[in-house]
Image 1: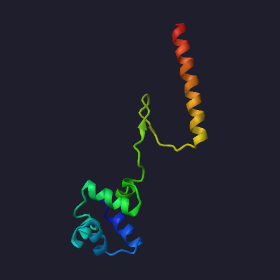
Image 2: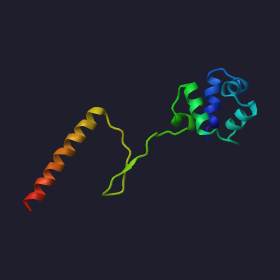
Image 3: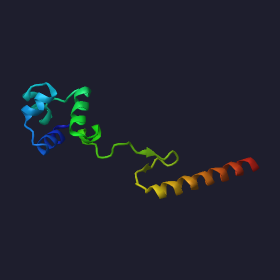
Image 4: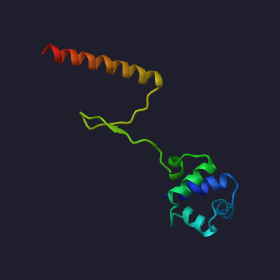
Length: 109
């Protein structure tokens, strides 16, 4: 799972498998197994690797979208569009107005 990313990070830092193994207090063969997706490091080791290379765990394991998308409750559609901060504020303001309008309409009925 992390093989490709780990190999890339290690090579970008001009490190050998032996150097990384020494840093992680493990065997060179263990690093080779990680890079070839034969074995995976435990959580503590993943954190140490991510900290050393200054990447997030999501980046280390190759997640392209770090946060799961939320489903729209009424339609089941995925909300995947990225918005700017200004657009987010506008949408939140619009949603607040809409909710007040719906609440007022319910109170009149």
